[in-house]
Length: 270
Ligand code: KIV
Ligand code: NA
Image: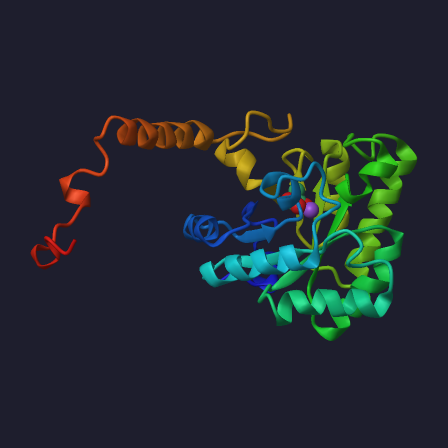
């Protein structure tokens, strides 16, 4: 069983693996494959809910899907992503929302898109027993401020801010840190500066672990970010199965005898 503690022990010894999942059957496969951490990411907004950003994703959507993932997971650590405006507006409400992820949705921890405004929150959550995974670099909930999904920390000042914030979140009790879309050499320095595990996406090979969005890994869509990799062709496989069903029905080949049942007693009822 992966715990926040065992994850810390693994860091630096063996690479940590993390994938997103948003439903029970996918989570069961990810868990059985030996992935350390399952993130119920607000990337669900783009990946499975049909939104064009993560901003519309609600507490209820993340909680419902975290529940499904947690019920299907035996070994992996289940981390629920805090959606846009579920934290950072009001301190007490933020703690309550994070608490619901554990208390009602059975998550093991929460992830929070971090900044100067989440240091104190990270400390409060840690104090009450809610483990926090911090998230620096590209934070997609800021897309309207950033004007896109560009690489972050590419200039000296911005890079220093990321290292400083990483340290402050570790100090505040974060058990791990996601680094998204930053230069590899910055990710290496953050990893060296921290004792807690860093998990990168588009952050090069020198973090303690790697995370990707499951629909990218499976090859569900035509497009995936350039720093990602399609390890499968689930899109193609779904197309094949769905077309085969349609063709089978249209050709009168499905259902066949072995999919059907005749009961003598119900002959001539009409
Ligand atoms: O929502 C998500 O999937 C994430 C990962 C990309 C880290 O935040
Ligand atoms: Na996210």
